Image (cartoon, rainbow, N blue to C red; front, side, top):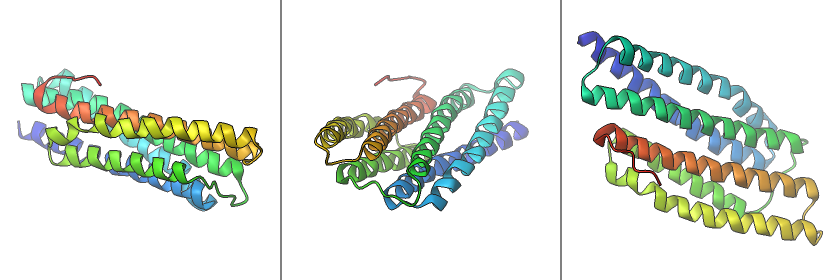
Length: 213
């Protein structure tokens, strides 16, 4: 049992690191786009390899425990929830890399200047931070509040998308910048959806119930 406890502790530690890395990647990717920071964008793309590596390592450890060690019910829920979480965290990392790729696509340090896109990114980063806090503190009330936070993201995403379309059609926004802004807004909206999923898996880890949003 001591070995199982050590492995569970290792999984939790690596899962926490994956949370931090994915959340940090989103913030850094958005900043690289808004500030025209190509160095930061390249670092995000390169850093996605570490996210993928952590994902694979945690996955292997969880399957090993579930298949070979017959864990107690609480440990089973933790491992099962961790397997779901790492999938969402890996996708968040992928979307962060996609945003960084868009910054590189614009190249030459060109910035994307859109106030609502900046606000949208702050909503998403806040939601992810709340998800991390819910996990670290086993806070089910906070985990269950993420769906409400996502509503703000969805509403602002629709506004950004419409504003971009209007800006391009009126010639107020260059086509390439408009395309990038629309894509990044969609990536951020999808990141928030995965963030909501993380809250649901925190709930599942402690209750065994999966409350779909």
